[in-house]
Amino acid sequence: MDERTVGVVVRILPNSEQREGFHQNFGCVRKAYNETLGKYNALYEEDDSIRPTYTFLNSLMMASKKKLPYLDAMESTSLQQAVRDLSRGFDNFLKNPHFNYPKFHSKKENRNSFRQSIPSNKKIINKNKVSLRRYGEVRFRTSPEYRELLNSSDIKFNNITIAYDGIHYYAYNQHNHRFPRTYYH
Image (cartoon, rainbow, N blue to C red; front, top):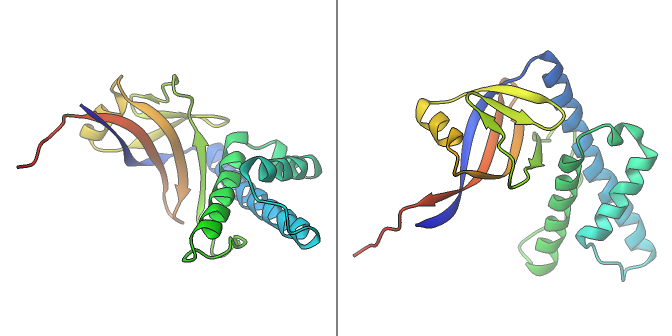
């Protein structure tokens, strides 16, 4: 059996409180990303020997959380994932000439999404509900085949991304799944 990372998209149906919390988190993730990038740019202008490692960028974000208390009220792993995305953007820029320098996220052209990391021993799917940190259980809709796949006991979730396309909310699940090994002739 080969273990691979597989993604599944399901439409979620949050209640009004959860929708409000999602939109606050969308904005806070963007703010944390932009604040961290702005602080790094200012520090780099003063001293160009500073390297944008994840731990350094995370310390800049933690300083922003002290200055902006509404960031502290948000779910913490989604802010950490935003800083991880920024760190990955810097890594790509520094290692590959085809990537551009990380840019600020705008309100108008921003993809409304945030990502939560999931502990490896936690089961977040229960029948037709997904359990999210800070938001509780959110109902989802999908085909019976995917519901059976998501409810199986051998799935370990890596992370979950909540996104809003302007009309509907979606949850992108990334998980490890065992597939039978196939041989090609």
